[in-house]
Image 1 (cartoon, rainbow, N blue to C red):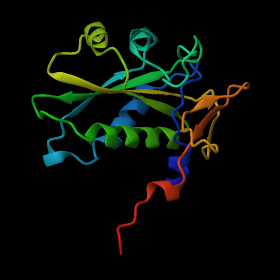
Image 2 (cartoon, one colour; image 1 turned 60 degrees about the vertical axis):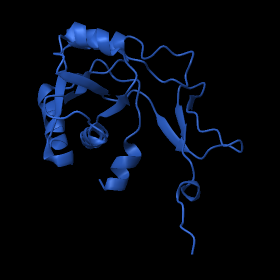
Image 3 (spheres, one colour; image 1 turned 45 degrees about the vertical axis):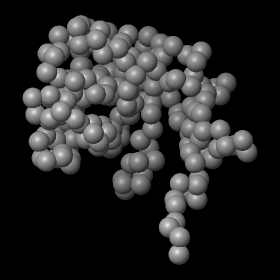
Image 4 (cartoon, rainbow, N blue to C red; image 1 turned 90 degrees about the horizontal axis):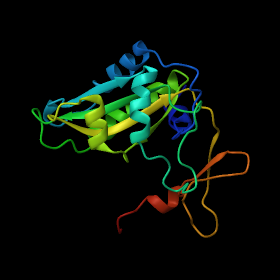
Length: 193
């Protein structure tokens, strides 16, 4: 699979085959990919909490916010929830700021997941205090992102925005998730001659 194919298949999946587990070894391989990514000053302050047991996943799930544009959808139903989560943490004893590093690591993990037949979603909206307390995460770690992972149970379609330019994602009657992407000509700026 080419990099372009990986990127195009790497969508924000929010419904999964919960009955298919994601093994610890797979999560470990994905984090191993992330550890080779760029790090400011090579401080390597990111740490990863792996949740792959059902009881741990049941602790993580209610702390998450799902799909802000889908206001009438509370998130995946029982049976459609992720098979695993990776919490991306910033070790404050190694760095004060984590800038772009969590995003680079998260994207790398998701590309690796796609290569393995999985899908995922980067979640930035979650109840940090509750998650920290329930998983007993020490205060030295800042919870940066949560990655939901599993075998996708939905179809995500990329398309051009409509005539009104609306880029909000939406679901049709069949449950297909539509994601409008701005045209290339709209996002490239050319300096004056």
